[in-house]
Image 1 (cartoon, one colour):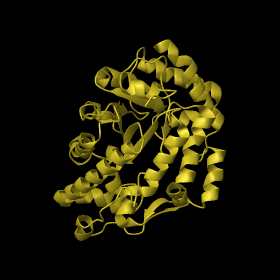
Image 2 (cartoon, rainbow, N blue to C red):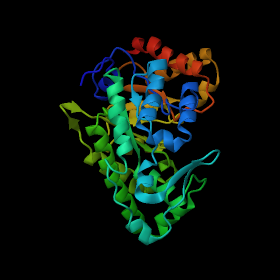
Image 3 (spheres, one colour):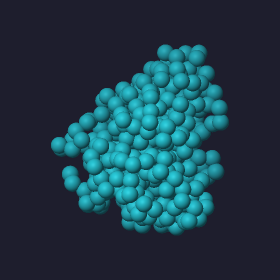
Image 4 (cartoon, rainbow, N blue to C red):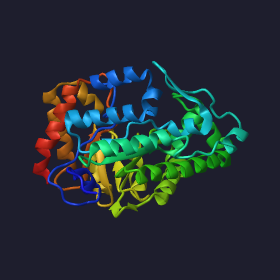
Length: 352
């Protein structure tokens, strides 16, 4: 498929482009007044995720407003555990909560099988609808949480400061945790492949909580399963190569390991030095990131200066996708996002 704007895909495939592509984690989100209006129409977050029409609407909002170089499917990483029977809900001020978290070995070993066009059919309906509405303007990114990150929520029942349940299981019964992670990797492979078949042009695996781990535990309990997923993904569909991105928050200490698992790109948080990352792994993978999301709390002049700093840090040449180092905060002024996108568009050609 050819896109009117193919800068993002070309960059992932190491083809020459005239500028640095730009998209933003959580680009469809609460900082946008149009998103808040659509969410109010939906009634709650899960209704918004489970309505293909409304998910399509919010996916396209930042594309229409800012002209990002890629769209990302509006959904949530926790759709998979919800489909496995853990009963996901979102409470204001508390975030995601599972009413039926995993508490016994029997529950872990007898998780519900998930049908991609059954329990998760609403996601695939959204993918098909978004692709149709985008009409080849820009590519659509599909995504999933990593098995480690999904398992943290499934065992803790919600977000946590210490994640003591999963970290305790990691030492007290590693075989059981591996059994859970292995099951989740298989489901994520099916989930991402279903998204690919339905039209996404690239996929990203979010490992939000991999940064909790020591290097050895990260390799054994997180990266190992990310690699299993990458090995199981559809690499080419309808004569189009389907590139992949991996992102571990607080994963800057393990860049070399991340560069060797088969992803096309590695996402960097804002605590990682972009120039160091390029020197270390830029010859193996494309780098994505990594402006501090807090920059967007400032003003357009400061945003523009900080964008230039990120571009300077990466330096001249291809192989860089501009993004934040994590998701945008809910209270950001959209004008600062516009300033970021405009600055990347106007300043980055000088580096190519």
